[in-house]
Length: 128
Image 1 (cartoon, one colour):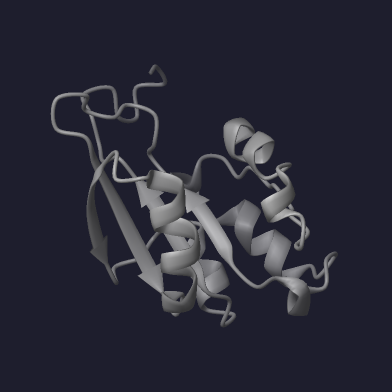
Image 2 (cartoon, rainbow, N blue to C red):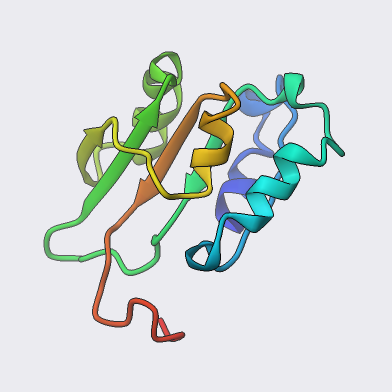
């Protein structure tokens, strides 16, 4: 998230505003994302796209696969996805965007793209 925030400071990305939010422990419930959407502390009409990074960080360096789950976000894929990855990953693009923090945004008609590098041996062990 911090690397992305740094990249978005570049002049070519200045035409938009960005809001970075970190939700934790969605396995216990989508409480953080649900609160953000339902408590309406922020004008959701200004939210044009939600980028969700879920289970990223332990990329297989031998076979680097980045799974991208999209929902109503096709117009953003070319301009964001391919520009950011620069063909450094094998991309798997699906429409399955269920049971992530993106779900709450999807249910409120906000386009979402979820990035994941998949589960790993340390999944839910509090390390890695």
